Amino acid sequence: MSLSFAALTPILSDVPVVEEERSVSVLATGTPPRFVVEPLDPTAAAYGVRVNFTGIVKDNDSDPLTVTWYWGDGNVNVTTTGPAGVNTIIRNGHIYTPPIQQGRGTIFEPYKENLTLRIMLDDGNGNFVNCTTLVTVTMPPNGLPVRPDIYLNGTSSTKIDPSAVVYVVANSSDPEGESLTWTYVFTNAADEVYRVAAVSTPATAPGEGVWVNISHSFLTAGLHQIDIYVSDALIPYQIFPHNLTNTKYAEVVVNSIPGVGDDINVDPNEPVINGTIGYKLVNYTIDAYDADGDVITVTWDFGDGLPVVVNTSAGGIPVYKFYQTRNYTEPGIFNVTVEVTDGRVGHEVYRYTTVYVNSTNRPPNLAVFRPVALSGGIWALPNETIDFEMVITDVEQDVIEVLIDWGDGSEITHFFLTEYVDGNLTILLNHSYSRLGNFTITVNYTDNEQGVFNHNKSYSLTIETRQVFIAVHEGWSWWDFTSLGLICMIPVSAAVWAITVSRKRRRLEKEGLTIDEWKLLQEQSVLQAAEQEKKD
Image (cartoon, rainbow, N blue to C red; front, side, top):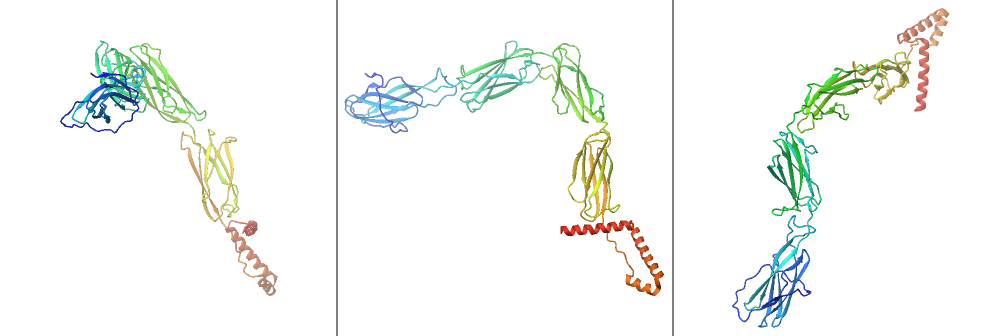
């Protein structure tokens, strides 16, 4: 008869794994071996921790024994003994790591896996003896999923129209990030379960939030109950505590959509900004009521980039007139939208209108743009500094932006004018041209406003540069006149000189110059030539 006892303290090493049990057909001779003491049955083991087994065996024929350890998890070890004519101790150890089942066990109550260890003795003479031991492996604890939160259409609203399609939204997470199973159960006011829907979500990072939603129509009025179960376990273990639930109630009510006037009233209907004061106040109204007495919320979007504004009624069934005002300082086209709702899903009513805001602002006017003085009267010399006077007027005295293209490829002059004196903007400018030619100056100016007429205006002026070289034909030299005087005496000489001077005056007059102006230009040419020579 074999006995069981607590495992002796083992100090053993694992031996090589044998892949499979081998069948040997040998004619048995002698007496078979036997277990004097079998390993402790059952034996407790912890997941991933080595557990040791000890037994006592004996063979009356003193045969050496081959001991095969079938661990019960697919692994096999083989050990041997010497001649076992007397009681012989066998020892071996194993680390159990069976597959972890999803969603099994808790920190307080870890689940266990039961495996069967089989030990076979072989005396080499065809005699085989087996014993079995139940091994109970305590598996790692598993965290619980988070109790789900529930939302209807992503909000806390619970009053819903029977025909409305809503989204039932839930969220949860799992500490190990295991895949989750979500079960939706819908119960109507008659306490009848009329819909069950299941959704699965894949594994995630540990603790990562998971969201699911399904669409639903309640169809019947009354108080509906929505239960959502979330489990990190697999069937058949989707039970508490690895199956947590939350409940949401939806008040399903047959309710009228708010009544809303056909149009948004705009006063004035065609607003115009007074260019002098710079703004226009516009009043908006819309009529709405709710036959069920629900509170009405009116949301205004004026299409001008500013935040929406909201009106709220006091409830009840009277017709309400909702007011809003807008102060426009810039003209433009504005799309105004009004949303009216009683807070129930699908009860939003919209009204639209387009408002055209105009302005009386008048464009600026370039009253003066002219050169102050030109050396040639109507033309200038190369490199001559030309002074220009500019005077701009604007009824509203707006800021004026000016760009001047001098027509010679130089950088465009850009500036803003703001300082009005007696209603005018006056500025002096200067420019010079380094070469001969005709240059068209283009002045673009604007008040950057909208209103009557075109507010982007342009003016052009042409400047000519010349280089004056006046060659006067002297006719005779002084020697010729002297000789003639000697011959013809003084009266003839004086007559010829007068003719020459007369010719010179007529030639200058054709150039638009007097004798004095010509002398002045000659002096300026000499001075400019001297200055250029110094520069060179």
